Image 1 (tube, rainbow, N blue to C red):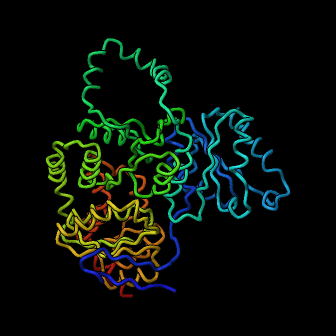
Image 2 (spheres, one colour):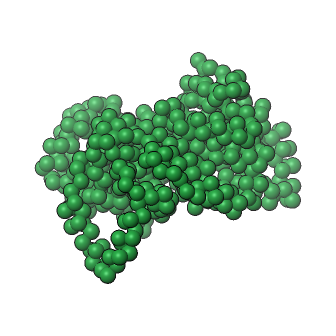
Image 3 (tube, rainbow, N blue to C red):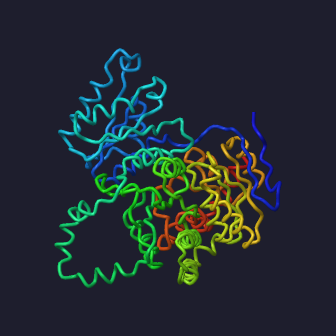
Length: 468
């Protein structure tokens, strides 16, 4: 049973539909691919079947010359039928991990199988943690979630509860002893840097980002006098940011609603509901929202954004006046649609596996505002889209670009429709002012490829094949 989406049914509001289709996304255990690299002193143990192992091996590559900090604990028939002792087997594996790698934390990633057989990971972890002397964080990043990016959400929500609940200056001083030694003689410079910040409550950002992007966003806030107290996740588990009741937190990705809820309910933090820093427009709105919460008048953001737009005009010119259709995959769809609308595109439909209207409230409002300013109709947002129905609508509307999961890209290309894999936006550096060019490189690559192939008669050939 499906509910047909009616594009532009309400011209003065964002239109929400739900088709109750299948989830055509990767499994959330794929979050291991980027989290084990981000948290450098961690080890991820995925507890599942051989199928999970095959998926991870394909998703992350063979890595012949690397020794990644993750492994599979494969459940055999005896485990599934509860004939074996789960605790003893996990203890053996974790002791081996401690002996071979000695990580600061072991993260257990539960899979669909552990859910089905009701494996008590949360009950086993504290006992084993006390016995082997290494923290064990349990996260159920299984295929029952809506999108593969939500695996990170589950892990961060679990880690949020491990953050220190008070700030200990002595520990911070001891940890920075080497840094102070290296910075000997630069006391005046440090005092000048510290004085650049205004007095405001502690702010922690949550969301896994590459270190260069973390630095860029921190510097953008520093220009406004705002100091970032910490990142969740931190580069090392031993450096998780302290979270005290009343601290402010702000997300950098739209798929972290569970983490946001945990920070508010469990850690009593105050969430800054801002658009996400994707594209120059989103980055400016993100910084402005944080400034408004702390009572700071933002400086130079309008000029900064305008300068970025001018520097990428050759890319924006390729998108201006064209249409785009999102099939739904990684929960970045609303932010990307808003950005492409600002670039002059018309968004025909936004398919999204799951829509948390509370966590993405600011982004949804920003999307509507952007549509008004650009003079384009509001797109229809289809939650849990039915791909069969979407393909019919794509055939009717004939968009210039379809952003889709990998499963549908080749069939659409065979029908003469330009596509872009949505998963590429997940792994690329697309946050902040400085990465706008990289973001547009991804979005325009299919269009630039088509322009380069036109002189070879490729377009005519594809049309003939589509007719056949």
